[in-house]
Length: 140
Image (cartoon, rainbow, N blue to C red; front, side, top):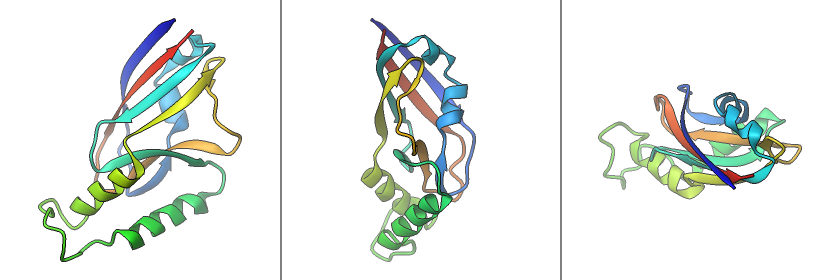
């Protein structure tokens, strides 16, 4: 049994839903040594989130962004936490709904995702900046 834990930094991305599977794997060569196990990926931010969803049709990412902007609209007079702009509190709400971590099986040195699945960074800020992930892999 071995445990690998590594912090990586994702490049800054505009607001939206971005597939980051390859970006993670490029910074995580250690995964190649794992035959079977589990990866837990945690984002160290309160205004972005992680999820797994379709990796083929880009309309899925556009539609997810549209859905969350309708459900949690900016410039809502009820929100008090807006010191960093109109996307401040709305980003925290979206991140809480989607979540800060995901778990993925690892098999033969790679994430064991479905054919049409990819890991998403859900960037809820107009200018979120670089995002840090902590990845913990437990396996053999």
